[in-house]
Image (cartoon, rainbow, N blue to C red; front, side, top):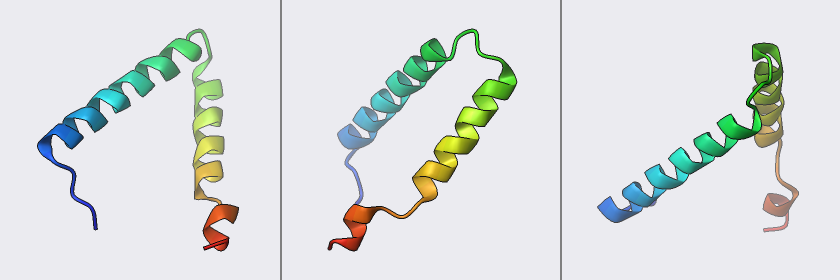
Length: 56
C-alpha cells in the first residue's frame, strides 16, 4: 500500500480542487438531473474492468 507524504497529500488536494472547479464550470447551466445522470454514468464507467489490467 502506498502512503503519500504531506506534500503528496497537498498536491492531491490541489488537483482534486482543480478538477472539481473544472467540472463545476463545464456543467454550469446543467439541470440537477443532467448532473446526476453524468455522475451515474461516470460511476458505471469507472467501475468497469480495465482491459489494460487484463494484460498484466
